[in-house]
Amino acid sequence: MDEVEGVINGTYDYTQLKGDTGPLVYPAGFVYIFTALYYVTNHGVNIRLAQYLFAVFYLLTLLLVFRIYHRTKKVPPYVFFFVCCASYRIHSIFVLRLFNDPVAMMMLFGAVNLFLDGRWTLGCVLYSLAVSVKMNVLLFAPGLLFLLLSEFGLMRTIPKLSLCAAIQLLLGLPFLMENPIGYMTRSFDLGRQFLFTWTVNWRFLPEWLFLSRYFHLVLLATHLLALLLFALRRWKRPEESIMELLKEPGKRVLLAQKITSDQMVLILFTSNFIGMCFSRSLHYQFYVWYFHTLPFLLWSGGVKKLAHLLRVLILGLVELSWNTYPSTIYSSAALHLCHLIMLLSLWFAQPPARQGEKAKSQ
Image (tube, rainbow, N blue to C red; front, side, top):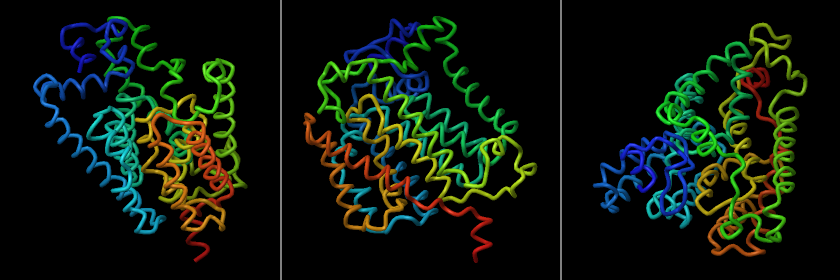
């Protein structure tokens, strides 16, 4: 509320906008949405009304997530109890902390539903709006780019990417006209330094290493390498060249086969999960970035020995790690262990068959 109040008072220079928790570091979509909340909640005073609104956001998010899971039919029904009821931290992020992360993820899951329905242009619009609330949604971008290229080829993908960029420019226009460099460096600051005090995932490291730029570069390189390996070896068909994806589907050497709902969701959720695994720091509110995707990822794994009970135990251990405050060496190590098991399980997973392949096998 402090941050958007500055905008309401006529300050459009992002370098001058700040609140009690620090400077404004979110894109323009956040400003517009929380400005609306500012007025609806009587200048931020009516906290109870804000909590009711965020409870609605929570229920809408569950509805969108359940629709994704219904389309894929990957996860057994009893897991939905965990998604709904078993996470104190998620409930806290939504209806106690009132962060912008839930708003961004609600919009992201809406975009995924549109992609599943084949409404790619509208999905890209909603995806870009989600990015404008918080840029963590960019972790899904590599997977989305792969899907767009698979579905349309390069030339028909460019207009959709341009639409996403145009939305960002339009939303940020008042701030870009005032101080373009200030807006870009604050709202999309990829080099922002995180505090060791709040890290959930790297507590077992010495603080000097956590703050080291060389460590950050190693994480970035590993992140990009993991994405490249999954794109080359797991997301595309083995016999298909990456260069083939750049062509229009009708002009490819191999017959273009439609990506199934399972494969579409797996690529998007894996793209985001890889980003979480190699993040420079995870803070407590970041749990909502991937909490609702964890069951799908676990039940999509290819390790047969990863039985139902073990999957549930991993969900429980992840939850325990995120609920340990302050984080400890053991909670951080446990979180990384769970991430490693899940990542390896996804790597050894059998790629979901595309629709043409399913029909042929039947």
